[in-house]
Image (tube, rainbow, N blue to C red; front, side, top):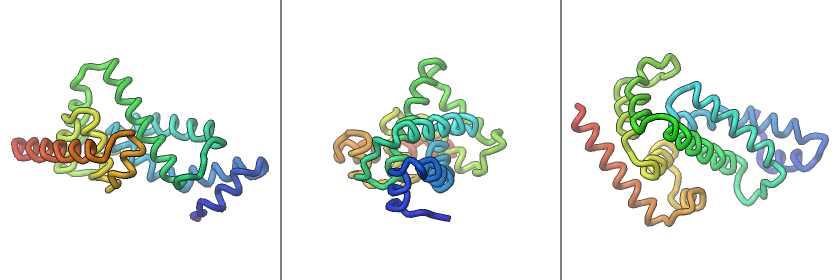
Length: 179
């Protein structure tokens, strides 16, 4: 059952229905959030960990949600930021090639349901610098508008477009050379 934002916001405003509203939000948006996170972090276990952080952060900050965007946009913003934080922490702990290693071993992940082409695409994306990678993922998988990305990432639309086009060319070049 899908509940519209207005109903959820009314439920969130009442202490009696706040928990139920958040439960509805979790059931309504969890799958979408999981796949958005999974595109960033690659492994199922990592995506689950990030997902838990996203839901905890959303619950802790639900009273500060201003409703100037959709609930899904707000959750998505938290998910992207948590994914990026996870990747930064992982890079600080592991070597710089950890993402590439993960991408190259996706086919062995029992939760990966893509084919060899998708695995190759993930390898190509793993090679990108952080900002290019982020913009590419948001644009390619989610077809996010540059104006939305600009608000979320606090970058100009022009810079984001440049990052996307450079990233897309790098991905294309990587795939051409791997075939």
